[in-house]
Length: 153
Image (cartoon, rainbow, N blue to C red; front, side):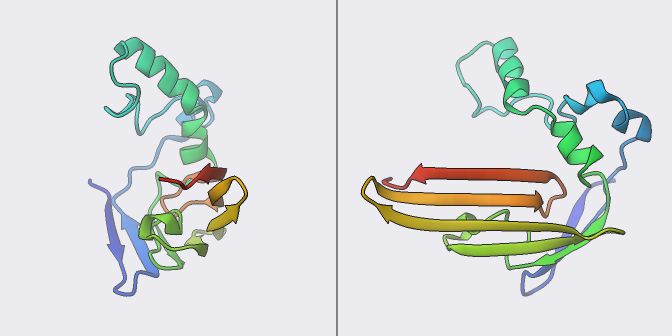
């Protein structure tokens, strides 16, 4: 079965269907937590020009505990609905060139909240972009991020 998302016309609600559950035996295997079930090999853009074994090794160091975040505490292997700020499936407003807060809730037996903030600040060091998010992203993974980057591009 193939994963399929249905998004409301106003972009504030979405439903995912067709996800395959991960076995409980994998979820309780602590060694498996450090794997990357969804993306076991790095994408082409990651460290191009290096040997494949190096790319894979650094890919796993870059993304530790992916299976734990996605499947043990996350719900990437479950079907659910999500509601929140439009566009509901975006992790932050940077994707739609807006600033401000974005919130969503994944509707499971226990509601799973998510909040993100995208902002711009002019400082003596130049323009800075602030990006923060925490909680269960609309795709189902537990995510925490805080970045302040230069926006002089």
